[in-house]
Length: 378
Ligand SMILES: *Cc1c(COP(=O)(O)O)cnc(C)c1O
Image (cartoon, rainbow, N blue to C red; front, side, top):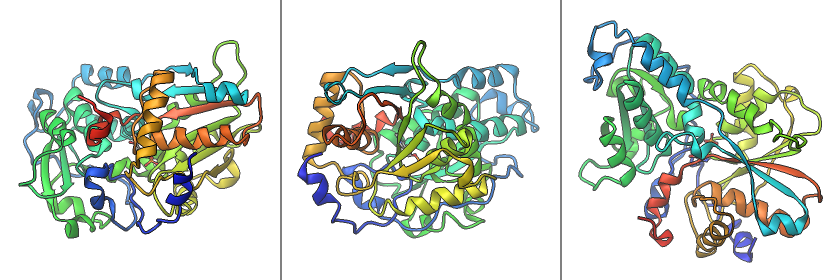
């Protein structure tokens, strides 16, 4: 990585961002504190907000039609693994493969979709809507709204922000997908971990910010299996890499894979104070019934946050453009670019033994590129 990356390590003035998905244009909004720990989702009450799907409104009991369940099953098929053609990997003699969770669906993208898998199934079977929260560029709300409209589940997003502010493209998509948006103040948003937070704003199954819950951890299981499945004719990967925000995805991968010899799993924190993720991941593992003894060997690569959550210094934009031009793989500044830049740093410095088979999880989130005009996207 460039010297800028080392410099960014010093600017650790930011609190844990969790999963706000806030690009640089609104990065002050990512400075929020608190924990995302939540009580397990409950689905006690039927939604009071108008269901936007005939399958929901047909009866007060909201029996879901078989097509909705089939659609859910169709949606969650393990994504493909592709070998990356990347000169940095070739030069280091390292094989880099990518699990393309960004390809799951045009709109219901990446790890956010998998974290929503169990809440969506529960909402379908219990016939209720889903209520959740996020920032203006939230990959989570974006995926939730799209999944809701596809499956006939009413969705309600509690958004940190002002109703008068122009909608981000992310929120415009969410609204177009039928999500009810309620804007709440920063002070109110800080209460999102309180037990009655969701109930103060609406009804439905509560899904915490970013899908960061025990259900989120459990929903990732099939993705975790796909992450270590060998490509036909090849040995299994030895090093698995993924970008971290709340650490839920890392915890899901670790708890699913259990104890496994010859495999190391590494998370790349994308925010300042990334070392806090050690505790968060351990806590998530404990809460989901596992323990650190029952996981593969794991660790974090610290120092890849490039100035902090959602920050995108010029060198990172440059890295994205060069990486995409060479590999044809699209990435975004908040998570996946920092992941690949960290891998590039390790490759360039001989920190990964030649012959190592690396499997990278592409967690999606490409819709968030729209928050970075420097990437010149339509
Ligand atoms: C949310 C997100 C992450 C981080 O996932 P966590 O489970 O919160 O650690 C990584 N990549 C993308 C694209 C995301 O949207």
